Image (tube, rainbow, N blue to C red):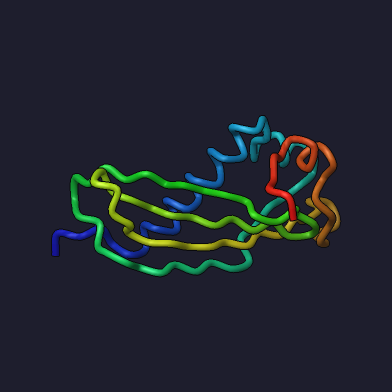
Length: 118
């Protein structure tokens, strides 16, 4: 069909949130080393236009709310012509790797995030 398969957008969102966290100095590897898992518990995607093969896409990722037990990411994906391809949202839960129970967002993550005033 010449368009990007819809299932790929979940991977694009993962790239966006991984790089956003990395830009603040937080990596999944560091979190896991410190006993924190961050599984996706919700994912939504609203398609506005099809991305086609050879499009150069930009993934814009933001955290609009201070994380607690959950952290929420919003996404916009645009193409090289700045046309909106899709918007999306994921919610992830902080899980203690030892107990497998939900936990509050670690303080070292909260200290590194720059969030808008609420």
